[in-house]
Length: 440
Image 1 (tube, rainbow, N blue to C red):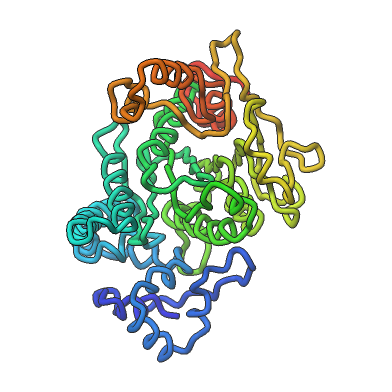
Image 2 (tube, rainbow, N blue to C red; image 1 turned 135 degrees about the vertical axis):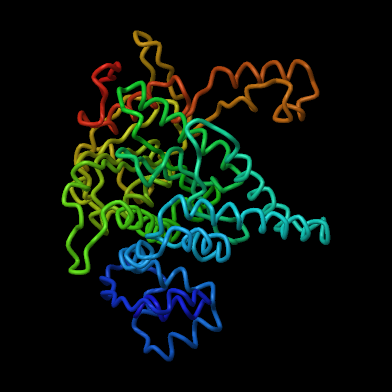
């Protein structure tokens, strides 16, 4: 497939003059995108399909992020900005496009999607699907409010439950990057909390001695299974792994560009940039599928409250990560239900390094008390917020609120869990000698 011809089908006519031949996708059962069948089509059939299914254009282009990156870098800066604003649904999701441009595109598209969703809810106020979509979009918008460091909307979809990814820090320039992958029941209407978890990790990495050249990504880039028996199924993870592979390959396409000969334009890029994956619950199953399928140059893969690793993966050595860790709280009674037919990554035979999460009083580090990824925020810690409005009985409210103040999730600030995750995701060459360090 030629990048320019496929892009022109979706009205990106200025790219139509770019003739870059891209290599066929490697046919790995997990790594293969659901759009891989388009790669095998003749030009005429491909054009006809894309004319009928224009939404498939991004999926087709994302089979080849390095080609996308090469074409995008050839455009003048002003043209890239104009394309991001005029074709936001295409540019915002295209792997290989720089993240600042994707942020411009996705913020533009988010405003449009919110307007459409508000009109849909107004027209059909009892439509639960429309209401949920609007909640998701508004939560994404709220998670982008002014913060330090700046947040970037690096991915967005127009699904009934929109998928999205928010970067805390600049993915185009930082040298330490950590993707956080959620588990069951985490959808983009939870984006404010999931982004807070990524922010907590960012802050904790600073406490572990990391320099300011870092970023974390709140990645809700796949449809997670709903709470219940679906978490024992593998299909959600299979599809999610494909999406995660695309996201991580897209990152390397931007940061480690290839020359026309296919060689790295910067031989030091993968030696000086550290990429981590931190996953929770069913997200560990999803991420393990992805890392087993492809070598994505991951430094540390951290699993928290794992729902289990598929038997086909077998051991930590098959995950193509330099370091593999697994932590689970004593009070986490839910994670094991996902491991009915899967491997516990903490088992000696699997080989993940144990990560302590039960608290360390000597360091004033709090214990994780259950399965939740994050329980505390300015909103749900505020007894006057709407989070507590349903408790009208004073005694019931007092007990529930007290219980809340004594429970902690894996990504909550101040926990031993977040401190140790930070410690194992910050390699020595990314630390500042003037900052304190935390030993894993």
